[in-house]
Amino acid sequence: METFQALWTSEMADGKFETSVHTLPFSTLGEQDVLIRVSYSSLNYKDALSASGHRGITRDFPHIPGIDAAGTVVSDKRGIFRAGDHVLVTGFDQGMNSHGGLSEFVAVPGDWVIAMPEGLNARSAMQIGTAGLTAGLAVQALVGNGLRPESGEILVTGASGGVGMIAVKLLTHLHFNVVAMCGKPELDDTLLGLGAKRIVRRQDFLSEKPRALYPMQFAGAIDVLGGEVLVKLLKSLQYDGVIAACGMAAGIDLPLQVYPFILRGARLIGIYSADTPLARKQEIWQLLAKDWSIALDDFTTEISLSEAPQILNELLAGRSSGRYLVKI
Image (cartoon, helix red, strand yellow):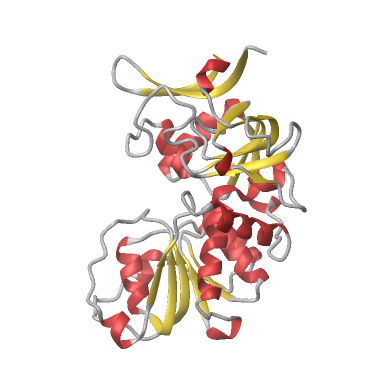
C-alpha cells in the first residue's frame, strides 16, 4: 500500500482553511519509531482549533489533525512492540505539530505509545480519549488531595462537554455528590441521569456582587471554564477545598486576592494531559480500564472520517455535546 486516507487541513489562497478527507502518500507521515494502523480516533476541541488553522495549536499546514488514536502496530523500529499489538496514543505532540490520528495510519515516537490496557479495545479507549484521560487526571488530583465522598459537593463546570460528562459519571461512580454547571437546559436530564444531584447555570452562579470571599459551598471542583467562574469557585470553596483546573473556555485571566489560599487553605491544581509523563498516563488508563471503568455509550456518537469536518465546526461553535468517536 503506497497511499492512505486522512483528514487534511490546508490553507487556501485566500488565507482560509479547508479540512476534508484526502488520499496521501505514505511519505507524508515521515520517519518515526512506531507505525500504527488506526482503528478509531475521537474529536476534541483542540482538533477543532487545529482544523480551523489555529497557529497556536498547529504552526505549519497542510496538516493531519487528531490528538487521539488507537489501533494496531504495523512496525516498531525499536522492536518493543510487535506487529499486531493493540496500542493507543493520546496527546504529546500528536495532532498538533506532528501529524495526528484522524487518519488510517499514524507514525509516532515510541515513547508516546501505550499498550492497550486489559479491559479496553480501540473503540472503548477512544470513547474515553483525551477527554477521559483529562477527567481521570482531575479526579485523581481531587482524591489525591484528600477529597472523599463525605467531603461535600463537587462542582463540574462545562458539564455538557466530553471532559465534563465523563467527570460527572466518574465522580458519581466513586460515590461523590456531584453538581453540574451546564448552559444547555436540554441536557439537564442527561446530566441528572449520569449522576449529577443538581444543575446550576453559569449566569446564576455569577449573579452575586463581587466579593473577596463568598460563603463556603463546594468541597472541590473540576473546572474547564477558567476566568471569572474559576475566580468565584476559589472564593466559594470550603476550608481545604481543591479545584482541578483543566480548561479556559470562559477566559484566561485570574484576577483575585490571596484570601482563598491563606484564609481557607484553597488548593488549585493544574491539569494538562497532553504532556503528562507516559508512566502517569499509563496509571490513569489502567484505572479507567478497571476500577474506574464506566459506560460511555449514552453520550458517545460514532461517526465516519468524512463526517468529522462538520462536527469539528460544531465543536468550534459550541454547538456540540458529549463525545464523538471516529471510526477510521
